[in-house]
Image (cartoon, rainbow, N blue to C red):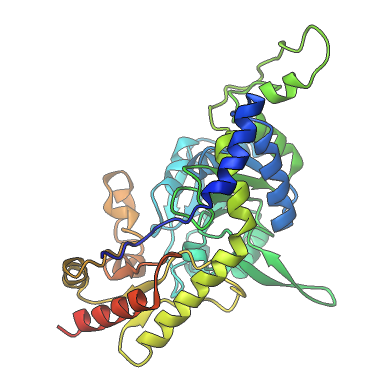
Length: 384
């Protein structure tokens, strides 16, 4: 039997109960369950605002656009970002007519603060930090730089549902969910994420006014959505205004139903992922296989990915595939793509990593035998 990279776990009966409610009420779109998942997400994370959208990609675009418009940035102003991410992180910058400036990554595969600081110019307006695999990297140093240079901080938290870190506060410390400190955080509930739906996400602004603006822009710029209007009384609840040209980015109640059940089991599922990663760690210990470390800031990682570095990746991938093990690559250096090739060569460590990194199978259906098989085959492949 083949061992896949990802295989999401759904609690079908519980999900169908929520969806049946939607069908019985005749309400499957924006509102009802989307309001419920927003409230539950705020309760779970402690973040002050949360808006359910149809994807992380939409959320990144909204984050860039709203920060740009609210702060009167110009077209062509710069956002420092990473080349080691899924392309949607950087597409969201371009959607807003801003310019991605690539900084290098550190040993945690997150933005290197020293490289970020070297890339700050008079046109720099924000930093987009990607918590790859659920890792916090050197987030606190990035946050310090943003405060020092008066930059906005966008957290692409696509992999970070259930990542917790220790926040130092006056008189002690507290455990905080990823997203605290950033001006806006965007999470993904895409099909293979830790909290899987078919596709959806959550955008969480620190500023409540920006949250309200995100709600309008995600529903075509309409000042009052259909769910709000359905609760109005009187004969004119169909009336609304348009102030901005918006997008069709809102989430729906079917996806929210899936997310509500997933959130209920998120901590339990992430603990299983951490246990799998622990087995990988133990299996690779002393083998010569180089694993990607967790940063000291990541008190509890969501462990969306388990990544290793190998010098002979093509050979390793072919060997594993031939043995019915199907790993992945997260990610290809974005500057290898034509639209980002203007920055090729600017981030040598990211480029080197992108040619060596492999993501091993990590999901809740893996057995101990599966994990042991992966470990043995990886070690064998690197010694061929």
